[in-house]
Image (cartoon, rainbow, N blue to C red; front, side, top):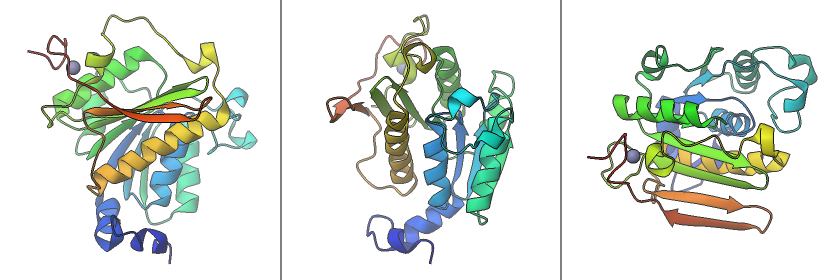
Length: 241
Ligand SMILES: [Zn+2]
């Protein structure tokens, strides 16, 4: 039986497996973080996955983007990732969207989702997703990694104590910590993406404490993983006032 090891967990059990099967999750970014996130959400039986990514697989991605093979180079990541997930898990519905998420298509693509999960590497894109999440009142699980480090957090518009991405990084901030510029150790995105998948499953199954109002920070060179409070900024340009 596929779900035996989740069934054995009192925090998940039959109820959790049903919740996962009914869940609608939109994953933005099918790169280094998106690959392990998607692999574990698919394997956990998350029933409805939308994969949004406008990029194609490049040879330099294969160091860390574990859903892809050499034969996928040149293919849209959303299509290649969906094909891989469907082959592994025939019981789930996977919708690939081989486009960039934009202000124009964003709200219709996330409509009806229980959760947005993002693992992209551009600050401007994160701010766009943050605004869409606030507008649609859909929680946003955000993850980032570069070098040996990563962060995971949950921005929940329905939680008055939850910060939003703009509380953390002002909208006029410069791009920082990009994998393309700074590099990243392959398994670091695997570890951070796995932390994001864990928090996603906890959120969907209501396994407390969920991460809302907090951030996991991982320094995988020293091996330190910490959970720190992430207060709202009352002067935030998106959620303040
Ligand atoms: Zn804010």
